[in-house]
Image (cartoon, rainbow, N blue to C red; front, side, top):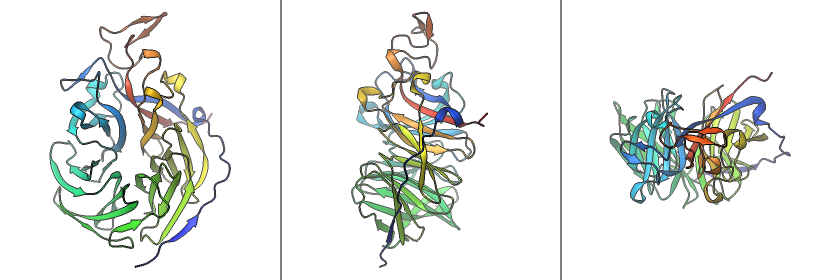
Length: 350
């Protein structure tokens, strides 16, 4: 058994990154409380959106909710680009799994971190192909390593990164083998407190967010080198070339890092007032969680526990709740909407 070497990466004082200079922020998706989705009213659930993944074709998002009907969770497939009618944008709903973390492979299959297991579904969330038992998983990432399809998962209870080589038969996942890293597919992340989202960078390194430890870890493909950098409340990570975006939970910012050096470049702030969203969200627990990037075009991030401001909403479908308040038209004039998914579109600076 090999011992992993640890390199501590010191952070310089963060430079302010002004979101409005380089990104245009919009609301990509919301739970429209006055509407029903596939016959289910949304006035009470789903809530607590966390996991987020981009479909293999780049046309849809998969969103995981930790609170749904009957105390279960929910995972939704949502078409990108439809922002005037969120009911129409919702193309599939899978009720039951929590979806604390979600990933997609190059054939469109969907990997869902549920309570005590990882579930693997087809792209339409209709058929369960395979399940992998794990203690408490809140981070999944799928990647190709040569001919192998490899799944990385964080185990929050054991403080481990786990590696599985998946068995494919046509479009099906039929099995898994825990292997690699330094300990037969298991690597203990010493010093970690609460491992959450994970992602693989373009060079094959595995990054993990430790929200309670306030660290982002980077692990070499063979597991022999572990590096970390200090980031407040990191929840998930996404990559665009040599840029890493880190969602920072209840700090409610997105940290931008240089991937090679792990140097913090700055923090992107959400323009809450401009979007007419409540900064602290429902019961003060609003946070930024799941994040995915589209190279050269910015990123999407879930606003878990978020809601529109002042019990109004300018979003969603116009209906009987649409009215004027103090001379301004609101789609929902007397009811807030919940659980935004935000889009930050990269734009050229003037």
